Image: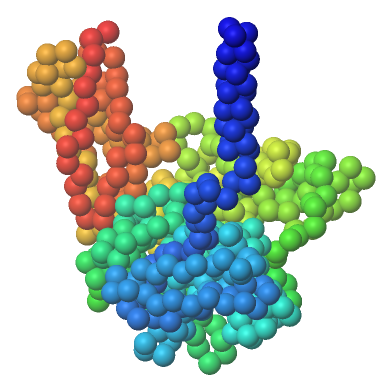
Length: 480
């Protein structure tokens, strides 16, 4: 009897275990289905102010579309499930205007504004096509992916780079299409407030940026050469008002050919002439030729030019085309580099000549240099030493130098301002440790303080705005 009861008990346990296994290994129909997260595009549509009620149509390369409308803050969100990227986005504004943008991923942020419209429209124009026609027939003229428009996007960002900086943005971290922003009249939205883009009868777009607080205006035209795959960019910058206004015009060629062939490896770079004598105030040119391993010249190579003066004070400036202007007498070495290869060293000797009388009025590096007549149309860096800024453009830096341990002021400390490691101004602290560096051109400076018995210390990237004195540059010095 005991054995019989034991077997019955074991049978019950076995049956229960099998039942549990059956329940656990069922068809799964009783499990809660996982939610499907839709793929969405979202962003802001703005044109100097948020655009409410714009009809936004997203079209994939297969021709399928999704539509939505923007809200009162210019925000939109649209589900793109079932669409094949890359996408073209068309926004039909209540005013009747049309703006385009581009999305190349499954989802994410895609903003729509005049600069995205300029990027997309220019890309199609470079390929001899129309963005309006491409939107109508994406199968025949598919949208580019972001990689294909990267060079063009960067080129247009460079045109507005100084304005991005003046509105507190880091251009290297800001993507005109995908970086989020708010329509609050600050940051990037403030740039859109100042921006107007028009197209003339021949189809050449013109970009005008006006800062009413500083009376500075930049006008840029972009003339597309579809046959050469390039853009001729002309910029006219006007500062001040009335008789005090100064302006300059410069032209650059920006290559934006998509999917270029693999470049030929550079074996060497030759710079000519190997020796150049240049009078002050005059402009001459160095030339560079890249060659392959067989000695054949390589076309289409861009060079980075470097000029190293013998001594602390620059004797000349050189631009990206190898054009050099003499500032003061002395000697310098000149090289060109590309693809990790550096050229032979050429010698520059600057001798007495015409006095260089330059003026500039710019926000954060915008080129606005008035050169002698021989330099019209030539763009040089704004860091050139010896450039004279109008008094209404100049600013300053003010602060204190104190003991790092006790907080007491350090009188008689020497304070210097450096631009690209070149000292451009200096002063001495007063009995309260206070100092003011004056007559500084708008730019970013490194400010260094030193005093007897103390280790020197510095503060980097101190920005001086147009006509303003930057306050609160306080430097602590520790005992040696």
